[in-house]
Length: 309
Ligand code: MTE
Image (cartoon, rainbow, N blue to C red; front, side, top):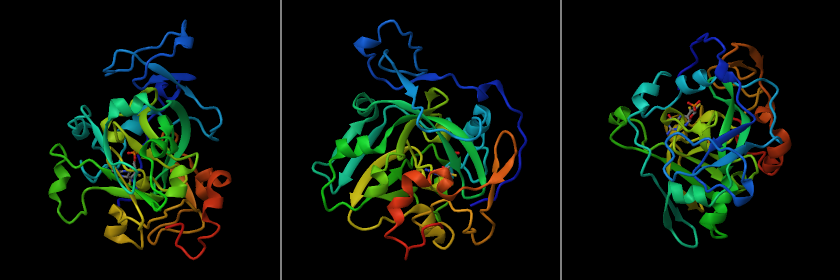
C-alpha cells in the first residue's frame, strides 16, 4: 500500500452538510407529508425518502471537504495512486446485483434497489482512518449491516462474513495479475452485528460516487480503511476465516483484524498520529479510531490474536 503524499486542498463550502440529507430509493412514508424531499441524483424509482442524520455518532472534528473525500481515494482496481476518480466513472452502477450465499437459509441474488426498499436509510458521521495514517470525517448514508444480516438469515454455523467486490471490464488494473483479485474483505459475525458496522450507499447526501465504492460499500470505522470493501457484489457466510485481499498480499502488514491502535506501529511507519485531510492537521490516533466504547468488548476473548495489524 502506498504511503501518503501530502496535498493541501482548501476547505470548500461543501464541508458543511445540511442536517438532513436525501438518499436511497425508498418510498416517502405517508406520515412524512409536508416534508420536501429533494430527488436523489440518479434516482430510478422517482420517489425518495430522507436519510436523517443519526445524532448518536459524533466526531471531534468538522467534516472533511467533499472534494477531498471524493478525489483522494484508494481503489486499486482503477489504479494504485490516489487520483483515480475520473477512471472510476466507468464503473456502471445500475443494474447492480448483490449475491448472498454460503451458510444462509436460502442463497439469493438481490437487486440493489430492491434491497434498499427493505432497509431504513440513515446518515452517520464517522471517522475514516486509512492504515497509511491519513484520516477523514465523512457523512455516510446507508443502513446498519445488521439489517442485511437479518435479510440474509445466516445459519448458526456461520462464523464469518466475506465481502467480495466488483471485478469488471471497467477496471484497468485487473490486468495486474499478481494481485489476488477480486478484492475481498471479511468480518466475524459478531463484528458484522456490531451497531457501528454499516453498509454505505452515499456520502454528503448524494449517491455513493464510484470512486468511493458505489453503489454499496462496507464501512467499519474502528478498523483501518482497507477493511471497507468498495462496490460489494457478493456476501458470503462461512465457517472458516475468509482470505482477504491485503492479507493474501502481505499478512504481516495488513492482517485480518486491522483494528486502529496508536500504540501498534505498522511495520514501516508509526500509527501514533494521523493527518486529517482538508485541514492538514496532525492529530493523535485513537484506539479503535475513537470507537472503543462500542467495540472493545468484541475482542476481550481474543488477546492471542494480532488485533491491531
Ligand atoms: N475496496 C476495493 N474494492 N478496492 C480497493 O483498492 N481500498 C481500500 C478500501 N476499499 C480498496 C477498497 C482502502 S486501502 C481504503 S483506505 C479505503 O477503501 C479508501 O476509501 P476511500 O477512497 O473512500 O477513502
